[in-house]
Image (cartoon, rainbow, N blue to C red; front, top):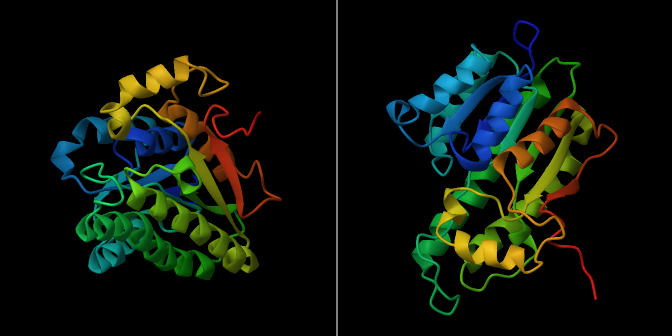
Length: 256
């Protein structure tokens, strides 16, 4: 805690789901180290809103796929927060081109897995080492934001599905490893959420939802994920670790 406030690191924080998460945490008393790849002057509107809610929160520019950036992100976050109660692994990218898996390039595969899986895994390793060493009696958690694509096939973006499936196992492994330090680990699986990533296929998704794709008949919003992560960060599921929490409007319910 810093000045009596809980502290969180959120990656991919400035837009989409990350924005929803980071602002939800800030609004409910967290000091947030918000991590993103864009320069500070490109996220001024976001950082102004973040600081309006939580004046001591701050932005760190960094690319989690870079070893050096991961180390710097950890250094700057702990320097600014002093201690870390919550890490939210939200940063992720989709393929630049949605290509059938028989035409997928190695470059696209390496880029998506390098950020979504490799980068997230090793940033968590760096942060978790420091969290484990903290003398801190507060409730602590790591949240991995994956996707229904961890278990639902999309053959025109296979690299994304593979990255999220791998990240799901990473969450399980970290839950197992960090339990001895009192750190809970959760996986949050959003469904179709209104973000930049889904904007290009929004018409398709709206049509599918209208046709009954989701029992809750609307597209999800970043705030839906934000509220879920907030509950986990606050310890609402304190006797739970390594579990998947779906935020998908019931889309993955199996039915006849």
